Structure formats: structure tokens, C-alpha cells
Amino acid sequence: MIAITPEQTAILDTPPTASFRVIAGAGCGKTSTLEWFSKTWTRHRGLYLAFNTAIAKEARARFSNQIEARTANSYAYRSLNIGQLNRKVQGRYLVRDIWRLEKVLGMKSGGAADAVLKTLSNFLISEGSKITATHCPEPDSGRNRDIRLFVAHAYKYLAALEKHDFPITHDLYLKKFEREQKITGYDYIMVDEAQDLNPVLISILKKSGLPIVAVGDPNQSIYAFRGAVDAISDLEGPCLPLTRSWRFGEPLARMANAILGHHSRKPAHSLHGNPAVKSRVMLHKKGLKPEHNTLVLARTNARLFEGLADSTRPFHVLGGVNDMVQEILAAYSLYQRQFQPSLKPEGAALEYGTWRELENAAEGRDGDPVAKRLFGIVDKHKETLDKKIKTIQTLYRDDPDEVSLVCSTAHKAKGREFDAVIMLDDFLSPEEWSRRRTQFQDRARKTEQEHGPLSPRLKARLKRDLDNCDQEINLLYVACTRARLTLSLPEALFEFWKKV
Image: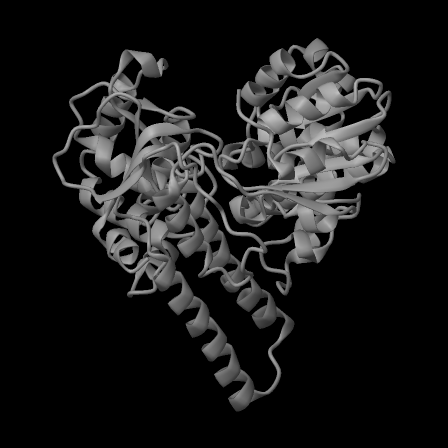
């Protein structure tokens, strides 16, 4: 049995009668600590809100029977009796759903389906009931009033779940729960992965009026692009750290600390490796086949597609291949609409409305890495894209135990661990993200010197760019700390490691 550390003892000695926060580094025994905590305070009935269904299931098997373990979505789903509607529930609305909704509501949006979709998505994960310009993709746009009116009509229509046959999204019913109900029947709430909560979930927690035990790692915050925020800093109570990683040895802890050293907000505590685990960091050699319990990690779906498009081996992708395929189809749809503007968009919603916008975003050294990959894939494979997608769908296996090749994006690998991790070459180094941060700041200073104070729009853009640099550094930290024994790096990251 693992000896309980002084840091864990401090957490176990804190009663759940008032809110507090646990800052848990990667592999630092968070789940074990929460299990012991639940069994220490058995006179208190608690609700544990897990990041996903698998974690909730594990918690139900391990925690005290005084704890009900669920995801926030499953709690809202049950409370609103969504299951009785016998309706399709999907992860997000696609552009085609909004096109259909325009017809149902008889609204002429002037081709604004993309903006409406993004505004609706932003509203559903936000706190409160008012749709404002801040929910719109372009807050200064003159057409925002029309978009907001449409979204208000759309939400009112969609929230009446029993009166239509549209797909129901998880964000929709969680928003409906926030506006109509609250969590009751518990003495306290434990919320996991509190560094990546949607504002709507933070609102649900606060409305409960219960003590909150918020657990997470601000440096594993990687979902800002979905509207998630770090609730660790937003919620109340003292902070208690967990810094001893049981997952990996000192070399990987050194790599993790070095990566986070490039964050704009340096961690208050360093990560310490497990002296009993012999970890190593090495350069990945091309052609080396993954062995058992090895994860191949890409930064983007596009890079994953590149690696799998010519594969002849069966493989498993964490989270499935649908997101990857939808993203590629969306980029291909932009390409096709150059020649046939009347074509309806397909696939997932991208932040680029035209093929030209995607191409512009991909240009230059500092171009958006995702845009570069998407543009390159469609440009290179446009004649055979359908065939390659079918090949990927044919070779994909649902069960990872059936195959020796397991792949993932870094985002989908969050919360997982493997003996060995191979990182592909679409990750930029922490030094590069530091360089870009400095470049953004210098550019803003120059603009202020030449033209006066930044406009609200430019301030928002600067904040978004700076926050993105930190998010990418967090993502590197998450990716590297999925490994237990061996971390294989692409050349740019290995050069960084040699300086650590």
C-alpha cells in the first residue's frame, strides 16, 4: 500500500463543511486521495461530479457509499427526464442543424448559419439567461442584433424539448437545468477537473449553495477553445497541493517542470517524480513500430489523419474517429464551395467561413498550425479524400485490446496513462510558444505607440492570443505526462529536452 504523504494527510484532515481547493499535479494520486477523503467523512453525504462517464464509474466502485458519483450531464439528464423523450442526443449542433432550424422558424439569416451556430454554442455554455454581443464570434459586428434575435428564438424553440424532433445536445439540456433547477439533497459537492469547467457548470455549483471541494490542476487546463475556464481560481476556499507524482520518475517530472517554466503564470509548486519508477526521455526514430501499451499522440486531428490515411494496420483511436473525419470533411466542404457556392456546409463547424480564410490562416511561419494541416490535407488529397476516409473507417477498431496501434490527440488522451508515449511532430516547443507570446506583446505595444490605446476588439484579440500560448504549453504538459516509463519526442521537443 502507498504511504499517505503529508500533503494527502492535510486534505484528509479538512472536513467538507466549507469549500476548499485541491491542486493536483499529473499522476499525483488524486483519485486515491478523493477515495480516502470520501471514506474519512462518511457522516456527510456528497455528490462527486466527474469529468467523464468512465471516471464516474470508477468512483462508484471505489468511493464511500455516501458518495453519489455522476457526470454533471448525467445529473441534469436524469433531473430533466431526458431519457423519457426517446430522442437522439449528440455532442454538438452541426451546421446542417442550423440550416434546418432557419427553415422551421421561418427566419432569413442572410447566410449567417455559421455565426448563429457559434453564438448559440457560446450562449449554451455561459452563465445566465441573456444573449449578449459577447456570445457572438465578432462582438463588434453590425449584424449581431439579428444573430442574437435568431439565437433567442432558436433557444426558446429548442429548450421546449418535448415539442420538436431536433437532436438534443448535452450543452442544451445542461443550460436548461441551470435555468430551471438546482442540485439538492447533499451535504457537499466534489467536482473533478475543476480547471476546465464551463461557466454554466460553475453557475450550477454556486447556485447549489453547498460547500465545494474543487479538485484539479490549472496547468492541465486545455479546453478554453470550448469556452471552459479555470474554476480553481473562481471558486472559494484555501488551496491544498498534491505534488508527488506516482506515475513516472524524475526525468519526466523534470520535463514537465521545464515545460511549465514557459507558462506566463509559473506554478506555485514543482512536480516531483516517483523514485521507484525508472522513466526515460528519448528521440523518436521514424519507422519504429509501437509496442504493447504504447500511445501515439498527435496535437491535431489533421496530423492524426495524415498518419492514418495510408495505414494498412488496424488501429484504435481514443474517442473514436468521428471528430477527425468531421473536421476533414468541413475543410473539404470549404474547398468545394469555391466552385459550387450553393453547396450546404458539411462536417463540424470551423472558425473559417471560406477556403480563402483557411488558406490565409495557414500562411507564414506563425500561421495557425491546425489551419496549416487542414489546408495541406485537402490540397494534397482532394482527389482521393473519400477513399482515404473510408479506409480509416474500415481499419478502425472499437476495442483497443484488439490492436497494437493506439492513437489519440493530446486532448482526447487527458486522464489516461500508458507505459510509453510517442509524440508526433505537430507539437511546437515551449520556447516557440514563449517566442510567440513575446511577439504578440511587442506588436501590441507598437500599435499603442503608433495609434494610441488598443480598441476593445484588439484587446480581446491580444488576450485570446496570449491565453492560447498558455493553453498550448498546458497541452504539452498534459501530453508528456501521459507516459509512465518512456517518452519518445519529435526532434524539436527533444532539442528542448537536451537543455533541461
